[in-house]
Length: 168
Image (cartoon, rainbow, N blue to C red; front, side, top):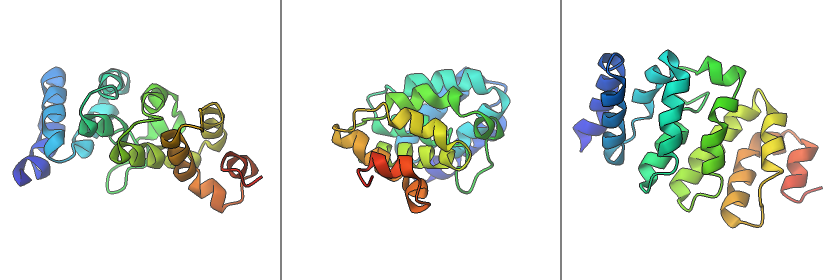
């Protein structure tokens, strides 16, 4: 278990770039044993559109680890990894993934969605607000994500973010 979670995803990220399908299948296979979020990032950098298309299907997977990978792997500002400049400039290519996970039953996945959206608020707060304001915030899972996703904006006193959490 430790070997898979520590080494194999990174190996795939370094040496598997010329074997797209096999490499992404491997990362999906490895992720329940430890996350492959660092291994997927070189694929996003090399071919963002193609990689995100696969990750969109992962966002509907029955395994919570795979769903989390679909979101965590494309976080624009994932700690301890390189930034995904294309997604910092324009987060919309990852929007379908976030939308698929906006009410995920798994807390593990919801934390990733909230962190991903909070990353985006650093550069595109209105983009995040425009989406969250359309969510059904009566759903406790969506409301949980919204509150945590907007934490930086709430801390800064953003009126739109405060209104979402009912603080007016």
